[in-house]
Each structure stands twice: as C-alpha cells, then as structure tokens.
Length: 199
Image 1 (cartoon, rainbow, N blue to C red):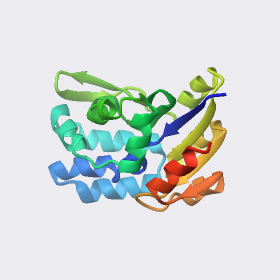
Image 2 (cartoon, one colour):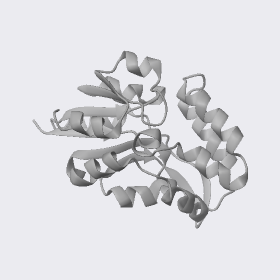
Image 3 (cartoon, rainbow, N blue to C red):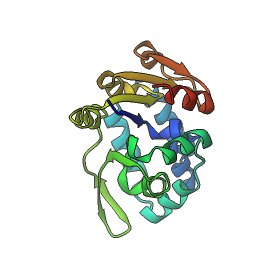
Image 4 (tube, rainbow, N blue to C red):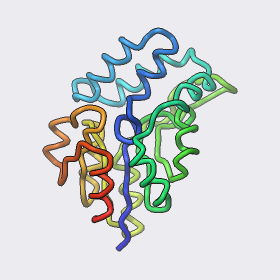
C-alpha cells in the first residue's frame, strides 16, 4: 500500500501564518493575528473566521496578495521532502486557491484548498471553504495509507480521516485537541521528515 502525505500549509509547511503576513500589507496585522489565534485555538469556527478574514482582505488586489505569499518562508526540510515526493504529497489548506498559487507552483504537488470567485485581479468572494476531511476521503478511494500533518484545530477532520496523524509544532505549539488525537507529536522539521520516511 502506497503512503500519501497530506500537509496543512500555514504554520506547517510555511514558517509563519499567511493571513497575518498578507494583512501586514494593509496595516491590519494585529487584528488578523488575533482572529488567527482565536481560530487556531478553536474559539471561532474555521469557516466563519476564514470568511471574515477574507472579507477584511478582499480590497487587496490578488497580485498584491500573491507577492506577499511568494516571499513566505517555507520549512526547508519539509519543502525538500515534498519536492522529493511530489506524487505522494498533497497540500490540504483552508486558504484561497488564488492567494496560495505561488507556493503551490513552488511545491509542485497536488493541492486541495478553498476556492474563490474573482474578476480579473479582484477577489469578489469566497466560493467553497475547504473542509479538510473531503480530500482524505477522496484519496482513500485510491487505497492509500494516509498520513496527515498539521498544527491546529481545523486540521482535526483531516486527522480523523487519516491512518496516521502527526501534530507538528514548527511555528507554534500544536493545538491540545489535535495532540489528543495524534499518533505522533514533532517540533522540528528534520525530525518530522525522518519520521515520515519511516511511515
């Protein structure tokens, strides 16, 4: 049975949360960071928080957001692992397809994300918000062993649908609720990749 690795993007593959980074372009970093922290802790439902955060940022041209995202630092060990195993890795993120496009191209693996309705360089509205169990249920049909890697409460549906869950604390401590359903907890990118190579 082939093993497939499903990675959360923000704070797992990236070395920072992307929405606060984008918000800093318009001076709303503090407000966005607060919403992000409330979401990561589970105090606000992910979909509600995500739609609110997107509404705050939808005045930004898509190209400006992509420029901010393009410069986001990725965990070098995780990036190397994904690039060496592209056919066996997916990014599973609630983030918007058009916003993360530069990172998706850089990583070169499959991606499952929230969708957007756009008009040229402008975000009109959020289309479908990604529920993280859906991609894993789709991958399950291919008879794959599924390993989920993430850090926050919104990764729980992905973990519940996977064979193995790895909570990763690369940027911040993984959410306690996620740790509670994880098979492994890792705090270093190199250690994470060594573990993944054994699964």
